[in-house]
Image (cartoon, rainbow, N blue to C red; front, side):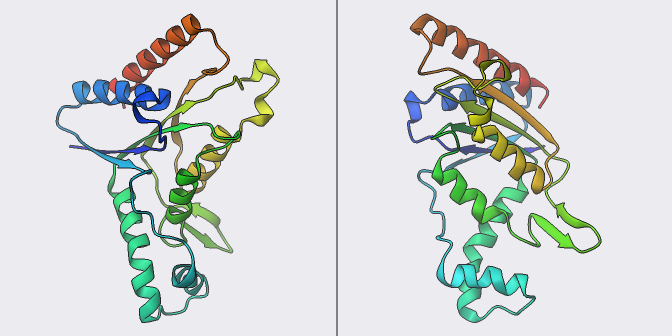
Length: 210
């Protein structure tokens, strides 16, 4: 029995295209994998610890191979719990809109908490950086108002997929499966319906063998 962690990064909920397509993925996944468990993190309601004060001091203590003070231990505990929750999963689904060519700040906050030395990556002079979250697939539903494919001439503006690929690969992911839903603001209504329907079908098919 596998455990799927679904990370939801849009605040628009029932109006969100990325969430709509992710729900189609989850419906297909439940049908194909009835014995698996699914856990959801809604980043707009999750209590993400601030990364300041004693929390950031605790990170630097790790980097400098120093023991944590009692204050640093207390501040670091929620970060460890968040990372443990993430690493417990066997598979991942992330749904996210494009904001200003990048990702929502809540997702950036979450990733800044997850990407920690000794937990999700390591470094040695001999090996360099090495990701520690390995052998697990991640599916990502990207919704964008415009179109940013190679044929559009706007590919250089897409820091959404570029950043997610970089961070996920940095912490060890190699099986990264994107579903791109675009252009949601620029398309005509009938085209939007067709694009979303195609993305939902792609998500359901992907979920069958995920």
